Length: 130
Image (tube, rainbow, N blue to C red):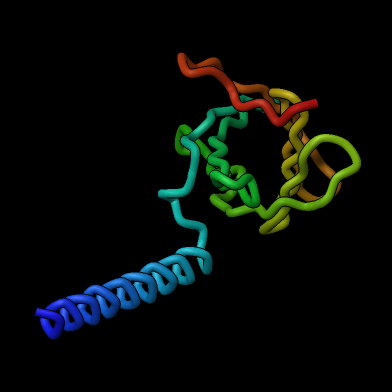
């Protein structure tokens, strides 16, 4: 019986090592790209000049995705990465600057910027803090 227990122990060890390797590989792959499964839902905004878009934050807040809504063209669908900011939260990418403070945000490109407010939803609005 001791020989069977030893074989069973080796088999379990091989399965555990294989599972650990698979887990590490799958985590490495998902960290290369923004995985939409790690996002916290879409939050709609309405801005000056009748601009509407959605913002989708990553679960770790390291990036957000913005995309135009209502067949709009601005802002272009983009993933913006979090940058250091003296006040509020700032994300940049594809020439777009997204700055959030509380529930309001500013969306800018170059020297121009527009102010945006959340469109009320039943689940609430996203708050970037003070």
